Length: 266
Image (tube, rainbow, N blue to C red; front, side, top):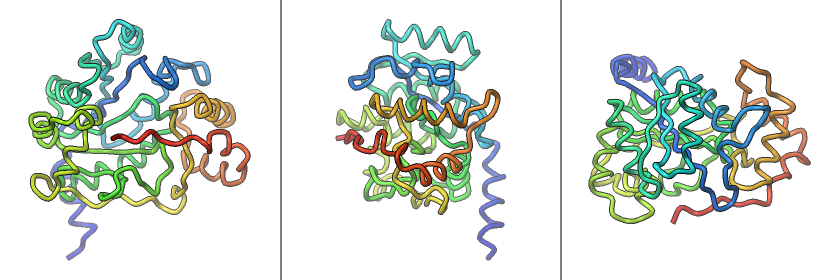
């Protein structure tokens, strides 16, 4: 059997499904308050995230999901200005926010986006969406199944894609606080009983690094400012693989945030 041809056939068959990114965004942050609207190259970080995700060819739409808290009125104002789809929901129960947003906009497949990933790669998003559809999986990510905090991609290229039916089941059954806050844990922790979860999408050689390309701390933001200063051109998406190659050649720049560690989800 021609595996590649079968995958492509399955992908085309399921492409009619409505596929969307839902980007969680809020102003509150214990480590870097207001980071989502902090400006990089003259635009709010959230704006860059949306533009990069919109470049993914497999997605039909992008939805910003913020909270009903008053401080997040600023995010709604930006969404209205830019013409983005918006949903406002629970601050603490992020799983419910995702479920309600997907339900409101009648989404079949969800890419879980985050507002603090200003170098999220549309190429990697497409890799994961295609793998989920071609394998008829409930959930796909570029994290290793048994170690959901470990990936051979740089931190900040995190991709999790799941079906609405899996999201619905998690929404109804998840009870622990970290399951509600982080959306996907219930799915991959119950893979043997309830869900069909595909193998982790592995990083191509040009991506396989352990750099921090996310924004949780001031040092992370400083690195993003530096990268955008060097690479960003209005109207164009920065090629993430070129950034990785640049950091290989300039370890002193990669060191700007190298001492910062990701907060564990539990």
